[in-house]
Length: 112
Length: 116
Image (cartoon, rainbow over all chains, first blue to last red; front, side, top):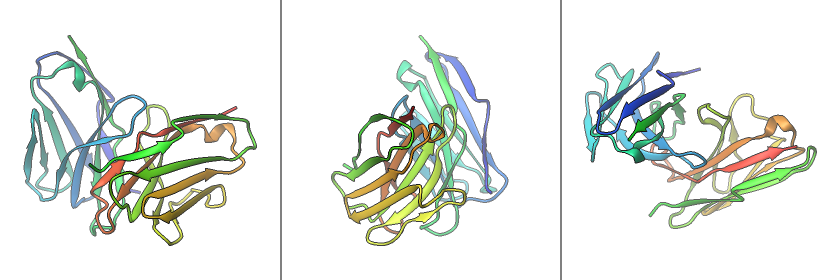
C-alpha cells in the first residue's frame, strides 16, 4: 500500500529556532495535509495543500506541496514551548472521497 | 466550530467483554465518519469509513464482525469492540467529515482502550 515517510522520528530544538520537517511518498497525492497531535488527544489540522507547488502559511507555520506531488515540507519559525507535539503529514488520493494516508509522525521537543 | 467528541475518553475492560465507543459531531452534520486506531508511537491507521444510513466500509485486515460500526444519525457513530482481547488495547480516534470532502476531517479527542 501507499506509505508516507517522515524522518527523523524525533527532533530536538531550542526555543526560538526554526525547524523544517519533510514528508515523502513513493506515489502521487492530490492533497497534502499537516496535523499536530498532543499526547492523549486527536490530531488537529494545521495546513491543507491542494495544488502542486502551493505554498501556504498559518501564523508561524508554512507548508509547501512539492512540484512532483510526492513530497511536502512544513516549516515552523521562531519555535515556542507549545509547539511540542507529534507532527503528522497525510496524503489524499485522487477523488474527494479517497481516504487519507498518514505518515508515522515526528515528535518535536522544544527546549526553553 | 467543527467539534467532535468521543465517549468514554478512557476505558478498561476484561478480556472477552464488549466495549462501545461513541463519536459525536457537536456542531455539524457528519455525513461520513472515520474510525482510526493508533498504537503507541505509531501513526493513525484507518479501520473503516461509514456513511450515515449505510454499512461501513472496512479496510483490509480489519474484522467487521469484531469491530461493529453503526452510523445511525448525522451526528453519532459508534464503534463496538466485541469480545475484546489484550491485543485490541489501543487509542481509537474517530473523525467526522462532510460527504465528498475527506480532506476536511475533524478529529475527536480519542478513546484509550485497555483490555486486561
